[in-house]
Structures are given as structure tokens and as C-alpha cells.
Image 1 (tube, rainbow, N blue to C red):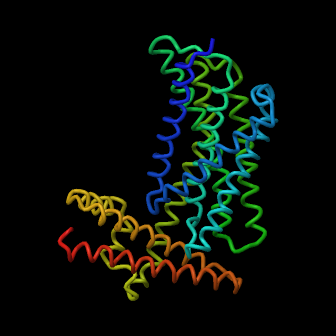
Image 2 (tube, rainbow, N blue to C red):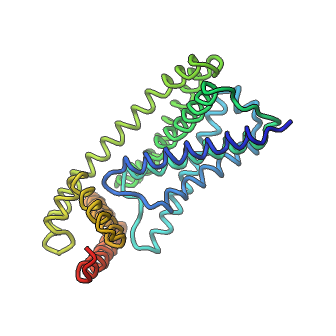
Image 3 (spheres, rainbow, N blue to C red):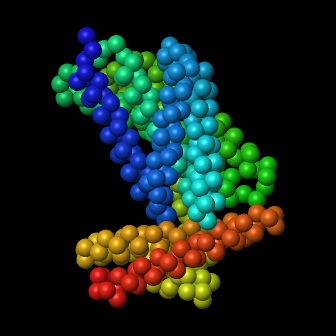
Length: 342
């Protein structure tokens, strides 16, 4: 008999784990928070990719053939990330600037697609199962929780690796590298997936032994993503300092704002002060101002590296759009101060 309670528990657990991981990866992007709508877009595309994979391929192949299933799933995830970046590029033409500024953005969006893939696969698996028994006792609940968490983390990590390839391609001025970097990300994600499957599923998943093997199998790809994130954040910090110094003369950034952009703790103090005064408009405007300023620094760096005249002109238009957005956001903050809302 179909255990609706068991299915509902498993589905809710998958969603909860995905939500927690999405909050974590968004928090890790310390310099420039990606908007929820764009992160949600990649999450949904990842879920749709899981749906297509499970419709086209049998569960036997996906569960018992590690190499074949890794090829299918990572290619589907690659196409989902590619579709997401293409959509964000199309939207950027309407908005005047792109939400993809470099390596860290690629990691965040790729991880979101991977988490969407894991959540979509969990939904399909549970809804198509003939039955499910609720785990007995606290130990069984914790085993299900950690197993679900690790599977979600694995897909998020593989997606982050793939996304890093697209993020790196956004910075390079070489046409060949714009093609090579995403493919390289796909190949590394595929290798990590195969290694993970062979080690993690070498024996039964049940019990502490299976969970330990899954943790060990994820250590190397997780370490790779962490190193990519640390490098990307360091590179962004250098770019912020280098590219925004000259913006002080334009009024795009003040001395106080530049110091805040160099320090995560300083920015958080400003946000907390706005929240403490119950000024939600100022809080949101400050976050948007800092995000736009970081985006401006990253886009200016991209313009400095660009040699193609046509693309350089397009990037210059993007720079002007960001400066206009910064000026408009600054007016919102000023009106709040004048109205005694600070």
C-alpha cells in the first residue's frame, strides 16, 4: 500500500535540504548577492532537467550504471546551466547589465541548478515509487536526513563545477576559451560524478558505513569548489579596490562606501543599522547599491580585458547603465534620510 506519510516526509525533506543549501551558497557569495529570481530560474531549470532525464531513461540504468548515468545526468545539468546563462544574457539586454559577472556567479548559479536537479529527481523518485515505509526511530530519521543532504550536496557540487566553467568564460577575451571553459567544467564535473558514484555506492547505502563512504567520496569535489570560491572572492576583492578608486571622482562611490565594499563585516553593520531602525527601504536600497557597485567593478575589469571593439562598446553601455542605476538607488537612500527614516 502506498505510504502517503512516508512520501510526504521524503519530499518535504528534499525541499528542506535544497532550501538550506540555497541559503548557504547565496551567503557564500559575499561581495555581490545574486537576485532570488535568477537563482530560482537556474533551480527550476535543474529540476526540469531531472524530469527529462527520468522520462527518457530507465531507473535501472540511472541507478546501476555509474558511468552511463553520470554522462546522462551531467550532460543534462550542463544543458540546464547553459539554458540558464542564455536566458540571463537575453534578460541582460533588456535590463542594461548582466547578472553574470565572473567565476563566483558561475559557481552560485551552477550550484542552484544542481540542487534543482537533486530536488526534481527526489520528487520523481518518490512520486513514482510503489510504496515507502517511514524510517523507524530517531536513527532511521537521521539516516534519511543525512542521505538526502549528501545527495543534494553532491548534485550541487557537480553543478557548481559546471557553472564555474561558464563563469570563467564570461571573463576571458578569447573566443576559443569561451567554448573551452564550459566544456572543461563539464568534463571535470563528469569525472567527479563517476568517482563519487563508484566510491559512495560501492556497497549498500544503509548504516554508518554507507554515509561515511558518501562523505569521503565528496571531499575532493567539495574541496575543489571551495578553492574556486575562495579564489573568485579574492579576485573580486582585488577588482573592487582597483576599479572603484577612480569612481570616487564621478560620485559613483564614496570613500565610506568603498571601505564598506572592501569589508564584509562593515557592510553587515550598515545593514543591521538600517534594520535596527526598522527602515526596510533603506536596508534594501543599501544592499542594491553595494551590489551594483560591485557589478560595476567587475564589468569595468571585463572591459579592460576586452580587445574586440564591438564587444567593448557593448560593455561600455553596460557600465553606463550600472552607473545610472547606482545614481537612482542613491536618490532613494537620500530621500529616506531627508524624510527622517534613517
